[in-house]
Image (cartoon, rainbow, N blue to C red; front, side, top):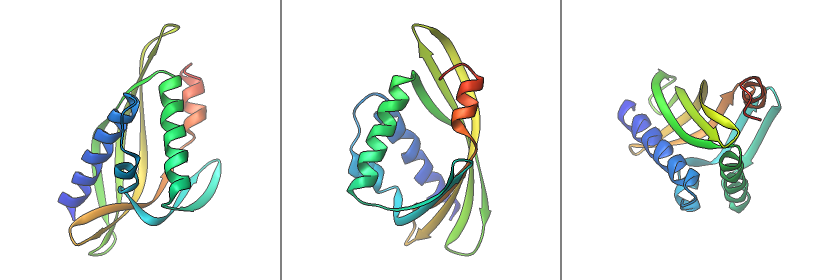
Length: 143
């Protein structure tokens, strides 16, 4: 399971970088996710399906990250808490780097907790829990 989860997030990080560069295959991004998922943050709890709407929302999200000056999204570390032989929580520590003409390079550390299912050696995200991203970015002067 450990290998499959680490490979999943290596792909996740690589695809995020491609998206920040404006060149990403949204079908490949969607392949990171299970057929259905749940997301929780201080903004609420939502569920969704891995469909065309997800691809559109993800594309808009990547455009927003580019607009606010996101230059990179790098994994600092991954800690895996096994639930059973097919499921775990991957605690992923990220560092996002932002820079714009009006913003000196700024690094922001945060963590997201992903629910991952591994079937046939392939990991897919079926949920995540995150903190208040907008409050953190506002606090750091990014938005």
